[in-house]
Length: 265
Image 1 (cartoon, helix red, strand yellow):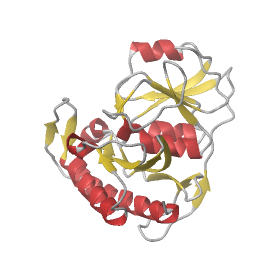
Image 2 (tube, one colour; image 1 turned 30 degrees about the horizontal axis):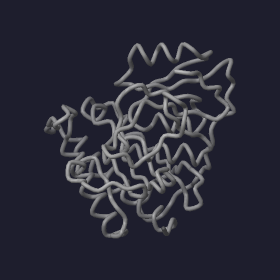
Image 3 (cartoon, helix red, strand yellow; image 1 turned 45 degrees about the vertical axis):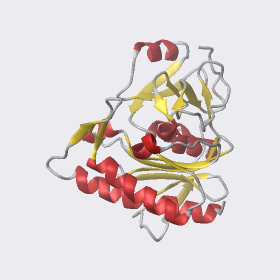
């Protein structure tokens, strides 16, 4: 894989998709449909998916591509592929809360190694560079000219005073019970894959997810977190979270800075 090219293409496509998403976000009204699993989908999801999938297929025609909006047509699985969630946090988008992201990732041998997470409403862009180090880009976020880049890294966690991030839309009692096992200094909530990025930047130490997610929901954030020195493990046995499963469904998981002393489930 040409990682330099991949980084350029993923970054540009995320910005192009973000522009289309914000164009629809700014309209007075937009249609919301229900998919077969009752999750919502909007014109923004579909338009962003088209932009990204067309761009990735043109740039990397020989690499398997998995996208959320086309998942019903995917009959081939593998351990190396590109995976896309064109609009993660559709509920946040519908309720105009801003915590939605564009997510593109490369999975190699079951591990997310490169990814981009772009939050267009917040103007925050995170991605892994060609060498695998994660950065946050600031500035104008021009499609052709990369702006100032700041390497990001996870916190040096203090287990007597942890900062925890949890889902804004999917918080439940089981999650609260698990968090209660830790000495928590403070908690914050965020939508979509931004939770991974908050751990990656050191703004949080721990993100447990005891709920249904799919590989396209997590791969890009997982890659960004790994590139910042963090990791993601299964909730049940604390083994690494792997990708390329037959149904693309994830088990419960924990994203964390390595200094965190993880508790058993």
